[in-house]
Length: 380
Image (cartoon, rainbow, N blue to C red; front, side, top):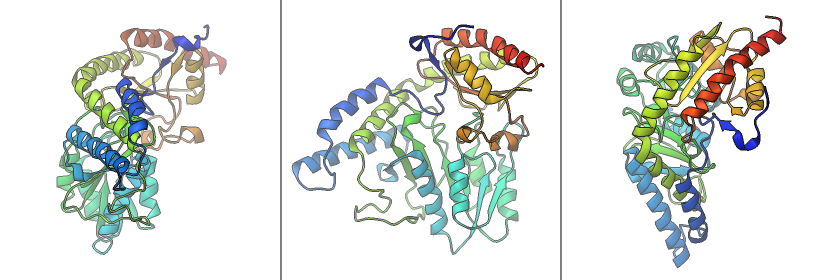
C-alpha cells in the first residue's frame, strides 16, 4: 500500500477539531482590523469593539436559542466546562456537596468534579453509552448527603451516543444540571433542561481559543475563580473580539446547512457502520440511531489502536484512537470501559463538513487491508 501525497489526504477527525469555515476566515480577517481595542473602553475604538462583541453574542444566542445575556465567551471549551460546573457547585455548596457525573463525561468534566475535593459519584451507562434518567435519579437519591450539581453531556464525544438531557433533568428534581455540549453544539439543537452549558468554537469550524459558557437566567451560579474588574460576573478577562466574531459567523454558517449536512453525514456513517461490522472480530460501538450524525467508533480485536492510526495516517486518513481527550497518554478509554466495550484497537472517525462519499469509499476500501496486514504482523 502506497502512502498518499499530502494533497490527497482525507482528514476524518472533526470531533477533535473542524477545519476553519470559510465564512469564519473571512470575518476573522476583517475583524482583526476593526475589533482590536478593549471593548470596555469608552473611546471610539473601544465602542466599535464592543459593538462587534455584542453582535457576536447576539448571533450565538440566536443560533443556540438562548438569551444574549446568558452567553459568555471564554478562552476555550475546557475553561467553559470548568467555570460552568464549578460555578453551579459553588453556588449550592451550602445546600449540597456531592457532585454527580455520568461515567462517560469528557475528562475536563471529571477533572473539574474531582478538583472540588468533594465526593464524586458516577452514573453508570448502558452498553451503547447512554445515560438513563432512572440511573441518574438513583445516583442523586442514593448519594451520601445532598447533591450540588449533576453533569451530563448532550452527546458523547467518543462514540456519539445522545443523552435525553431534558428527561434526566426532570428525574434529578431540583439539582441543577451542567451540560457539556462541546460535541454537539453547531451540529444539533441544544436540548432543554440544563442550568449551565459549555461549547467550543473549533468544533464547528470557528477559530481555536473560543469557548462558550451558557448560564440560564435566574440560575444560581458563583464565580469559582478569582475575578477582575471587567463588570461581567462570568468574565474571563479581555475577550478575543475578532475570534468571537469569527466563531459566531461560523456557527451561523453551519446552522444554515445543519439539517442537510446531518442527513448526508448520517447516511455516510450508517454505511461505515454496516461495512465495518462485517470485518472479522470488529465491534462497532455506540447507539446506531440516537447519535451524532458525523461520528462512529469501532474496535478491532487483537490490534493496537495506535498502530491502526499510524497505518491509516500513512495512507492519508487522519483518524483518532484511544480516549478522545487523552489519546496522547496511551491510556485506555474510560468511556469504552464504562460501556463494557473493548478498550484497545479502537478507531474513531468523525466526518468533516467537506467529507465526500469518495472519501468514505477510499477509507472502506483501505481498512480491510490495514486490519489484515497488522494482524499478520502479530501472527494472528
